[in-house]
Image 1: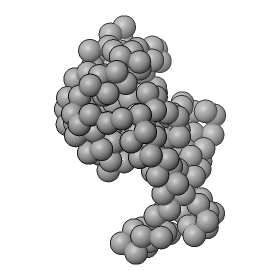
Image 2 (image 1 turned 30 degrees about the vertical axis):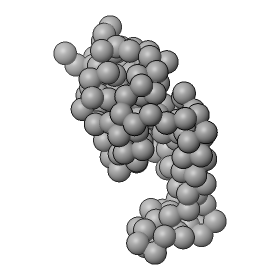
Image 3 (image 1 turned 180 degrees about the horizontal axis):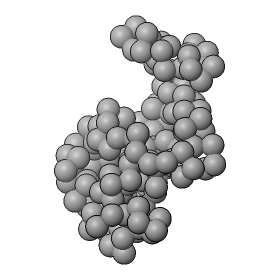
Image 4 (image 1 turned 90 degrees about the vertical axis):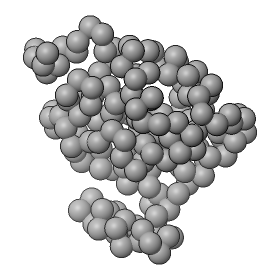
Length: 161
């Protein structure tokens, strides 16, 4: 089944973002919190698009997604199975709360806040990579967070969204 046919998602996959073409949409911002988790909404979008074959230049289970999975102690394949079951965003957030490592609301907020404030430029092992990523977007890597970069890249890749 081709999920792109007629730009209509298959009935069993709700709200599939069409990330493949620049005229389509990007995944939700990493700042959008679902169940208190940064990255979760974005991960769901990329997973749904991956399942539908419309992920384009994005990648599900990338290092960013793996940060969420590691924090909660869940496997990407289990997350993907939950998303594939046509679960709603709220059902997936509830599943994530109950799966893997139990985390308090305070721990989830602290982790999400820390990730949102993350500045790869301050990490000597990631500084060069981050500078290379920021350069085409005209961003000063010393002044932007990882999430600032991701949002700028999304805007450049999908100006219509």
